[in-house]
Image (tube, rainbow, N blue to C red; front, side, top):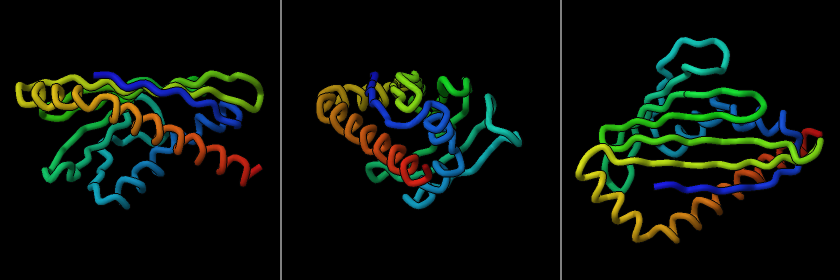
Length: 155
């Protein structure tokens, strides 16, 4: 199953990349939402090989997922690998400079089942695909607006 969204952001590509590569900010955000996030690598600078283990509740069940940076290409994008006991996936964020102060961000989330139970869950997600796609795009638009707001406040 794949979800894709695209947003144009009124900020330079370097600044947008800084925002999407703010891993500590994402860790804090997950912690505020009740997830237990633990860094599992020893890297001092952001790059390929960074990894986390997260535990959170989703739909009443405790979920565990391992996330790792698979590709780190400043300022063009990031690719994350996701792995849990039943689902694996990738999240790809690609950036393209439209002008000096405008950037197009394309985010793709690909999920693949690893077990029969996950296949059944994915089938039910396919039935709600339109609703999930709309929610994905709304959240991406909100995130793009947050990036723009932070950029305009700092400029």
